[in-house]
Length: 437
DNA sequence: TCTGGGGTCCTAGGACCC
DNA sequence: TCTGGGGTCCTAGGACCC
View (cartoon, rainbow, N blue to C red):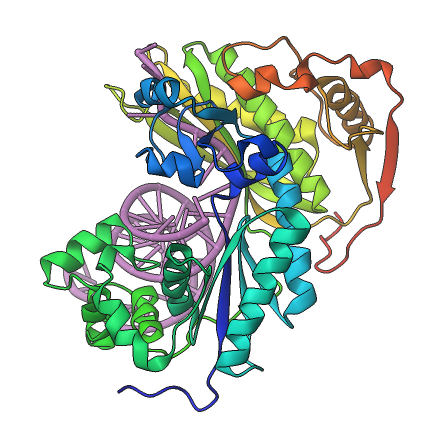
């Protein structure tokens, strides 16, 4: 009806099923087929459910306290999240995919878009099945694969694949309209709660109706993002595969607290810790930040609600922990208001540029991780080589502002200070060298 | 009592300059 | 004293994703 671009493309979306829950099941084979849920950082909400857990009616994002009875009754196995494990498994899956597809875009920790354009439809489908089998065999992770002429349609196809026994579904041109008619508009990739409600009020309730709406109207009423989406639903590819996602635009570290925080000192301690972690990420990626944002807030459901942020332009781009902590603490003092119960805070590093100077980084010799002891050594090094002075010590025993998983984490109980420390000097990356003063 | 964390992109509106 | 328009840059906030 609308026709495809001359050079028609084929995209595949490979999505790991119940990814975090599947990872846990890989390392506890007895749990295969059992109800398993994984909780968010503070053991607050459900962030992944195995198929059996979904079958019990446990919803995504549901607060844990609401399902506690259900968990007991059905002996659901509950895990706190282990992002290092999931990151590692993700990498293994992505490596396998890159061996079998010419171009792979890692879209998220558990999803990748693949370019299948070189193949015919039948070949694509066969390749999908082959890939699915190999990923399962080599990593233990089950995946679903949706194949279609655009990324947005590949998302739709993936939903079908997830529901089918084969785990692979190819959406050909002639089947698009029929499938979209069965999909409600809020289930389309890129249509969130807000836009769905607004569209429904305009009489656009299914994905097919959205496909048939005038792109110009959508652009005027909403924005260019949704206009692209309409074209994509029509089979016209507007979202290319992003193979080399440019280096990060921002780095965030934020947490909600285990209990309400009311004093400025405690709030500062939390923010100093987050800043330290953010600076670490910065150095790992060989970047420096030109600005930073600090934000604090009471609980989302609290009354009165207080939510404020401060953006600070740094005198010069830096990735020194001490300098960044100094700035973040000053911002915290400006943001703090007595009388409020703070439940969350965070730090966002902005205006990232490639770090010009060689950066010193410390890694645990065995695990490659960090510890408080290492962090304080790192601060000492920053003090010696960097410009700022350390005003705040990032140490201390676990307390309320650490999450439950952090409190459980061995990095707060092991005496790593007694272990030898490895000092590595990484060469500068001069893609966009930062001007020397 | 207990409600995640880390990102991206777009737009509107204000400040500022010529 | 009165009166502009257009361009750019920046920021805050909204909306979306997993």
